[in-house]
Image: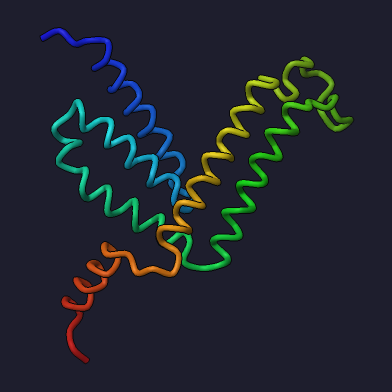
Length: 161
């Protein structure tokens, strides 16, 4: 069975998103949401992804909800967004090599990629800000149905005191 360019594109995009999502797991919320997006894309091509879609969706939304339930988490995420955008701006401005930079390295090793790398960092920061705002609006202070269901299951399995 011959595959079309569209099918190859879905597979490549899905797998790249999955790798990026796994790498972003330590971050509050975005890693799980990127993995959800990856599984949504991969479900178009793979039956195994389609079977796992609902459980990944519950996990991703619970992760996003948990990421905005306390002010320290929200502030840490906002700081991360500001830092990421700031680094992107710094990269675009591309100041000269500092005195502590090893002189034996070629000049191009200081902030390689220039405006493209900086623009990518800024874009990532804007996406992270969008995810943070979405999570805050959708989940902040609200009991999420999936989280409630998990708590009910946990309480049903806990023996009475």
